[in-house]
Length: 296
Ligand SMILES: Nc1ncnc2c1ncn2[C@@H]1O[C@H](COP(=O)(O)OP(=O)(O)OP(=O)(O)O)[C@@H](O)[C@H]1O
Image (cartoon, rainbow, N blue to C red; front, side, top):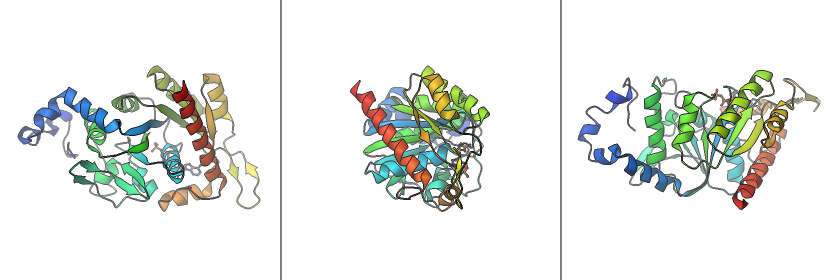
């Protein structure tokens, strides 16, 4: 992968590497680059961005579990970890030790039980290495993820965006031409809801179809008595969706197993918990919405 993490900015990142590369002219030609991106993406059925107005609401957890639920229905799924500085997807998929290899058709994505994945974390020397890149370098790396990765035929590519509504998630979303939809993950707290409204508006401004809002950490089912505890209140996500006129896809409860499943690199596919059921229902809603969108 190029550029290398030790460089300070995009201008000096290629010095001495690009100048001697046989592909330099193609690399420099924006039209050739775009054609390559279009060619790669033409083999992907649906490209869906997963976003959140603020960090820590469970966006990556939702991404991997939606991928697993889609995979268990037989779909071919890939995840592009768009969070260059905080790439958590490999950890959640349990593939942190896999290394990416370059083949004749490009960079081969990692494989987590049939789910293909690409992430900056798979290129780092050690799990604790920080990525201290500035904006242009992050964009260059992401562009290479889209341009150079041999996804092959996919039914779904889920793009886990960095949190927030800064220029970073916007630029990444714009790197992927023809996004078929966006999902905004929120938690029920007021602050998260306020920020998730901004995230929804961000996609509406970019003309990316809103597939809907997911409310995560929505209540807790007591593992002892089975009673529901409203830890952060519930229903805010649905209310925000109604106010904004976008679909509400469903609510996922707080689940003590989610953390441990994530830590073990397992997902909820084929599990029987309330959260697992919620993911299945959300996937059904997403498939319905995509079908309705296509029928328009
Ligand atoms: N429904 C849930 N129940 C219990 N724990 C959860 C749930 N959803 C997420 N978590 C936990 O919350 C933490 C944050 O989740 P995650 O990394 O997916 O958030 P994020 O929004 O992607 O964060 P960021 O984008 O800021 O990196 C993780 O430890 C995860 O295991």
